Every structure is written in structure tokens, then in C-alpha cells.
Length: 182
Image (cartoon, rainbow, N blue to C red; front, side):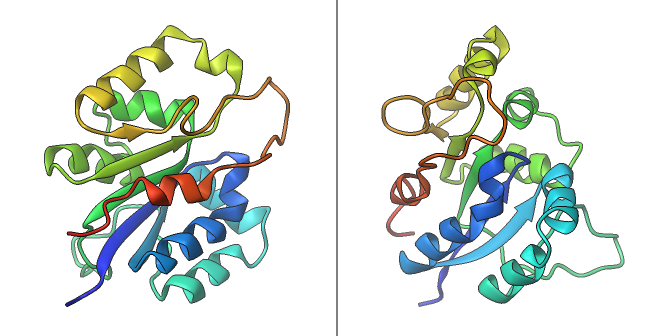
């Protein structure tokens, strides 16, 4: 039996610097993990977290992707069996629920709904963003489409608008919400 493949999609929020925690948790649950970062998260990893991209490549055995490949390039990652987007920003949440596909991360997430893949989303944003009506609508839309959005008591609880808040990001909760078999 081949390993199940998980695409771990990370957005530009403070917990992305600890995405290795999520990778290790998923690997411990027998997932082959491929990492896709939003363009902003990739820029953070490349410029503010020296060595992170190399660490993620070494940890997963797959290249860290952040943009669509060229038509002349062959795919270098296996097809996903499930998707986990963590951390999920309010920006990506709202674009995803609207069906926007202007980045690789959004394209994969939007297509994942159409493919009926199991998808788990673990947000990370503050209480001011969480209170915006677009965020509430987006969470409702995604949940109606079968996405497990871990927001509130059983997932991520938004924090006050402070810079750098990464306290107790529940990576293990997100991995536990993934399917246990194909």
C-alpha cells in the first residue's frame, strides 16, 4: 500500500514559521506531506526565516511549491489524498470561498472542493478580522461544501489584534481532523 499524500498549505501568518511541527505530526499519522506556501508565506520563509525552505524540503523529501509550474515542466509531487491549510489567513479564506485561483495555493484549495477531497482548515487571525462579515460568510460557505474549518472551541480561537501571537497553535488538532484511511 502506498502512503497517503497530504498537501499542507501554509499562509503568511506567524505559525507558518513552525510548519515543521505540523509536518512531523502528519508524518507520524502516516502521511506523505507535500508543502505549498502562498506567495507571501514563501517570501517570509525565504527572507525572514533563513534555512526554513531547505528544512522543509529535507523534512518532506519534496520541493516546497509556491507558484504554478510552466507547461513544459512535469509535476514533481504526487496527487493529494487530502488537504490541510494551516495557518489559514482571513485573506486566503475569503478568496478561497469566492473561488479565486490566482495563486497555486488557492487553485489547489478551490480544485480540492470540486474533487471532493477531505479538507481541513485551521485559521490564524485576530478577533477584529474574525468579526468581519466576510469572514463569517466564508466559513459558512466552506463548511457547507464539506470543509472542516477548525475555528472556535474545537480549533483555533482568534486572538486580540497583537503582532506575532502564535501561542498554542493547535497543529495536532488539525492533523487529528484528517481522515484516518483512504
